[in-house]
Image (cartoon, rainbow, N blue to C red; front, side, top):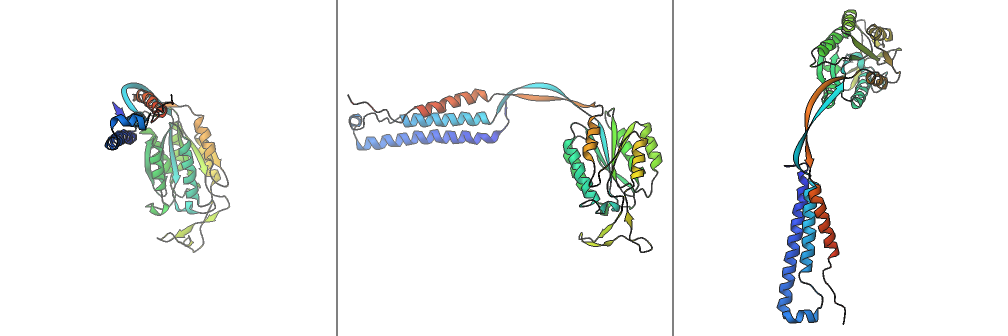
Length: 337
């Protein structure tokens, strides 16, 4: 036997105090009356006055509150085992964390906008396992496949271009690492997908080889373009997060970063996926629709133990006692004969 919400036992203490105070009050009143009047004179001078009714009424209230408190604590006795199955697909999100994602052609920045949209995606997913790979010059597994979306959000907030050990943008290695995450999954899903959020600038890496490997593994890549095709300079910040200047190349010219629509679209098309782009952000709602259309697989089955609720046994008597307390008058006035 157990209690689901033991904090409500405090109401049991209140009920006990109410009953005890009512009894003490009745005893004190009786002692005062006995000290002032003879027992035979009480009925003549105060007809209908009861010395015990207030105690009984308080006892009803106290015991009623005690039973209600125990009912609200949700006593549980007995168990029932149920087999629950979770169905979904495996999704690996590949997030571009290169310094070009600091560009502010999408407010507040490409990276912050991507974080916001990914958080929205995680809020809407149901039952799917999600992994996270971040990349710049190198690629890293930020989170393995998991159904704990809160943990993925925590790892997502930790992605910082300033903390990446190597600059650049290695999309090829990031896609190969995403494939590795999917292949190492326990009880992998039939449908597997990689969601790539990037501006598409691939300065290093073998994208074609990675795309071919994903295609052979029947893994679709849904690419989401972040940024503008017109281009935007890359801001440079100091250690305190203050804007200093825009990034310059070796000749002193300001570096302009542009979203590579053609490159991202070709990656998606080669794997049977789709390229998504919204000029003012990213298209997570469309990505979610595509994921929901995919065939769900049984990813996990577990035995869930449910406890039988027994609060009714205490709630009904508690209600009866409270009603009896309200109906019982402190005194019974006699009608004059």
